[in-house]
Image (cartoon, rainbow, N blue to C red; front, side, top):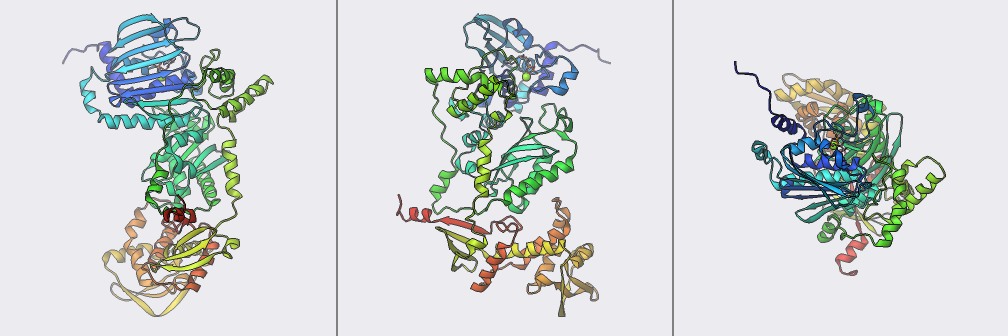
Length: 636
Ligand code: ADP
Ligand code: MG
């Protein structure tokens, strides 16, 4: 047997580093989280070459005392916990004390740091866990880390990295999430000397959303606020029209930390189900607060995934409040006549020019800066140290914080809402609820002017300076679907006998599907009898489908059986049957006469959610008079 030897400390460090530092974005995450824990009000990240050749993180936090610098780079050195018991109530982001030692093991690291009480700062260089330099230098308060040539001494790991572009995108995405998690901190990301992200740090999360996603998405936000005994949540969900093909637009924060959670995502998506096509995912930025006892934060080493107690309850309550919120708004998408105009709406915001505060502004902001922190639930680790204000903090934030300041002076408890000011949400809820000019309301119906039909499919309706376009198939499908689901629920679904019966010849698979679905089909209203061999006689059809093509409907159902079975959506089989039947029933265009169209619009008025067909396609879209006038250059 080979001799058993102890590994070199350097090798041990490199192995351990592999667990903490996978790629450049892991370095950024650890360093930015440290800066947040240090109570920084402004954090700047600069990267070159996707972070592989350089990552610079600068903060204006508490800094590290000169005599503590070496210790910070030792494995399991941390100022954040002392014992295992502390883990349970830790409110800071990092606590394993492994980040700095890991980064120093696999890169060339330079640290410049100064605390407010020290007169000078210190510069410390460490490469591959080996200390190279330590010297006194002049520096501003706070900390700067420079991490160069990541994985320079572990070439195998370097090879695993993706392109600089991909690694850079991962860092960009990470910074967006960090910025959303802390609207009270001003974040900057500079990539190859170009400013890619800048947030004001004015405590308003909606501003951060605007700074990241731009006008179109910000305009589509619906505020969500809910408090129950399972959780409380505040934040925004997007109108269904801004959905995406993956979950990148879903952002969940628990106790102010970014998390990935299947449970929350599934519940939210279930809420959106009547509004979205399959494999479309909504936009959301939701800040949850859970009782510490309900979640297990140590499931994942990076603490991104959590486990909950009471899954079922959380799921139901979240789904219900999302549905309710979506139901409060008339969700008709506006279509743009002008492609250029539509593109402009989607463009990301132009980043504000970097502007340092004027001297008088700095003074004024300084006056309020204490209040920012005393009113914030994120207490800096070193509360005595006065904090620099965010560089671009807004006067609004200052005013709010002045209020917090006076509260503090009066000895009142700090107001938690100061970080997420209430005004940012309430006004929107009210605005939407008061909106009475709905297109689909009995009131408005009297003033609809039905212009006619287009392409045998669309009905054009003029109302209040807008042209509404109704897809007759989608509308018909939705009306039929809601009526059917209602009568299934209330068990009032009827069967209409047909004579002579309809004879179906099934192949082997279809027959198998028929036997598997027999009971549900009968509950749905079909009456079917064996007719010899593989033939079946359909003697009765669901009353509400009487005039529609029963053969087409049944064959579609039997052919989609595999899909019904495999579909992981939790909707009951009967509901799936209803949705498939409705689609089959109205397939194929046919000219509709005006009275039918009028009856259809009347029927839409009665629906719970008339704006989307059961498969999530829009039923109605609208076009502004203004848009048309622009197109005809009546307005320039
Ligand atoms: P952890 O964050 O788990 O404590 P780290 O290795 O990330 O471990 O950091 C070690 C220690 O170094 C921290 O506990 C903190 O005291 C100090 N530190 C790291 N980064 C900063 C920073 N940007 N500002 C102030 N102190 C810092
Ligand atoms: Mg840390």
